Length: 421
Image 1 (cartoon, rainbow, N blue to C red):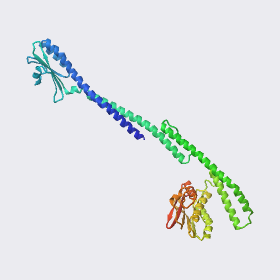
Image 2 (cartoon, rainbow, N blue to C red):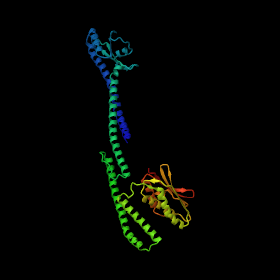
Image 3 (tube, rainbow, N blue to C red):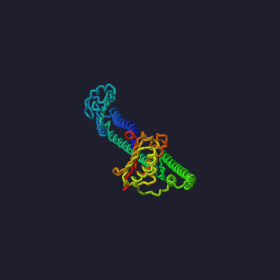
């Protein structure tokens, strides 16, 4: 933008300067030539009365004085054949004696005028004035240099003004872009300053309005999520009472355990919606242990359906995540395997250290997932796609990634999480 403004200013000023200075330069040259010719005409008019009324000695003195006051070459060809002033042979002198004034330009560029003067005796004398070419252009070069300097100064001033204005506009645009990036990175308090450029000031107001609107929508979303979570407490409490009333058995224990996990998940939703850090915020967990635990949990259902199920997880795979977050992500991915593949499609889970990352890979014998399944609300399998979105956000929150696709004849989902030190 700054370069474009400078280029426009340069082109405009250069065009205006040329349009103004070129005619002015031509006019200067014309005026210089006219000044020299006017001087020659003055010499001629001064000599005419002398030739008509004065004697030859007075005529010679007048020619000498005029020659000293002009750059032109002056000579007077008297009727008797004598020549006063510069002795110059000119074939047009005799033609001028016939009463015809002659003006011509020689090959060297000088201008020559021959003017006949009829004396008292009736004989014609001829005044010859030759203006050299250098006199016709005297001072023109210096005037042209002055005009070129003025034009250059005007161009430099225009470019400097355009550059300053462009720098201010670019600076304000850069500040606006920086605020937009801060807002995009999660800085909800970032606001754009209103500059003195009307268009950028309007863009800053629009960006600030958008940021305020985002704050309102986020607050509304958090309140809605928290409200929904709190509403779940009533049926969960009733369910807890019903579970406590069941006779002691393995089934009742599993239901109680699942209910406890649900209560923990609801608490986590409320904390996340309110912006409250979780109990394990800032801690590190062993991703291999958590992956093995969640695999064992889903393996029971997989064995009931006759699915091959294998888990190979190393220990000591530390990542900076809360156990509940990683468990929720793995439950979403392993639950998808059971929900969207038909028995006896199996599953293989692995968790290993790969350089500076921890790699958790889930391979199944199903049809695989399309990469567009990473978008919220699109899974390609008739579900909302929220499970994959939860897993992706869990990985990206600590700088990791999640990829989905096909591997061989089946599908593959892979979490890559930065290893904690």
